[in-house]
Image 1 (tube, rainbow, N blue to C red):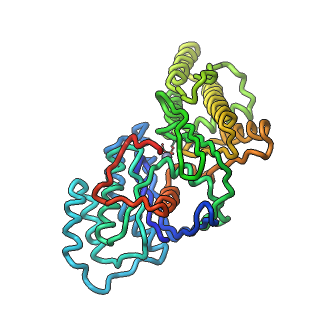
Image 2: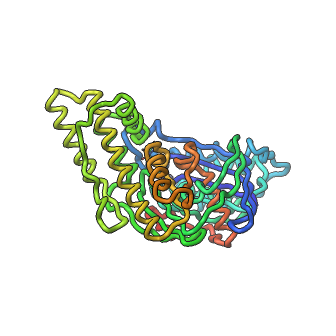
Image 3: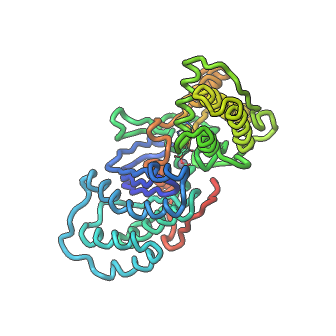
Length: 399
Ligand code: KG4
Ligand code: ZN
C-alpha cells in the first residue's frame, strides 16, 4: 500500500510518501519513497513560542512545495498528458474556501501533474493547534477529492507511539517493525503533551495519567526563556545541563520533584517554572545579573527534576501493569538525560526482561513518517473517513 501523509499540527509542515506492507502479526516493513519537512522554528523563535495563526499561514505557504518535492524525489510526479477536466477543480473551491493561499497553489499543481500512485492519504486531525491542523485536513480533503483516493485521519500521539517501534536501516530509508511485547507502557512527552499510556495490545490505548497544567516540553521552553535562552528551549537547557555536569559546577539549587510520590500517574510542571523563576530572581538580585554558572546550575537541576519525575512515574506504571515493553515518544524523547535515565532504571529493575524502545533522535520531533506509519495500520483496519466529515480536533484524545 502506498500512503501519502500530511502533518501540520504544530510548527513543522511535513509530507511523507511511503510504501508499506504486513502488520503486527506478519512482519511489517516499509520504504520511504519521498519526503519533505519544513520547520518553522526560526520564525517562531523570534516571538519565543508558536503563534497558531502564524503557523497556519506558514503551513499554507509550504504544503504544495513540500508535496512537489516529496513526489519528485520519489520519481512519482509526471506531467499530465491531457488537460484535467474543470469539474475536478470546482469542488476544491469550496473545500479550500478558508485557505485561499493554498487553493491558489494547489490548482496549478493539479492542472500540471498526473495523479501519483497512492492508495490512501493519512492526515493528522489532532491533537494540536486547531488553525494549523485545519490547513492539513483541508489540504488532504482537496487532494482526496481531486485524485479520488480515501483518507484516514490520524491521531498525532499514535504517530509518536508507532514510530519508536520501527527499526530503520543505516540510510534511514527503509524499516521493519521491531519485536514489541505487550502490555506496552508509553511515555509521551512533547511541547503540548505529557502522558503515560497503557497498550494491552497493538493499536489500543488507555491514558493512565497526564499533565494537569504545563507539558514537559512546555516547561523546558518556559524555563529556557527565564534563562534568556532561545526557543525551543529543550535542546538549550539540555546543552547547559550537560556543561554543568562535565564542568562540575557546584549544586546551588534544589527543586522539589512535583507530584513524584502522589498516588496518580498525573503530572504537574507549572510549579517548577515558578520555583525556577524565584531562583532566577534571587540570583539576579544577589549578583546584579545571572551568571553563566547560575544558568548551568539551574538548567541541570531543572532537567534532573523533570527526568526524575518522568522516570519514576513510568517505572511505577511498568510495575503496576506488568509491562513487557517501555516506549518513549514526542519531542522531549530527544533528551539524552531522559533516554539514559529511563534505560538505567529499566535495566536495574528488570535486566533484559523488559525491552525499551526509542525513536531515532532525528525522528523524535514532529514529522510525517510517523503519521504515514500510523495511517497505514489504521487503514489496514479500515479506519477511513468520509473526507468531508474530517474535523481538526485540538484536544483529540488517544483511544
Ligand atoms: O513533539 P514535538 O516536536 O512537538 C509537539 O508536538 O509539541 O515536541 C517539541 C518539544 C519542545 O517543547 C522542545 O523544547 C522539546 O520538544 N524538546 C526537548 C529536546 N528536544 C526537543 N526537550 C528536552 N530536551 C531535548 N533535547
Ligand atoms: Zn508531537
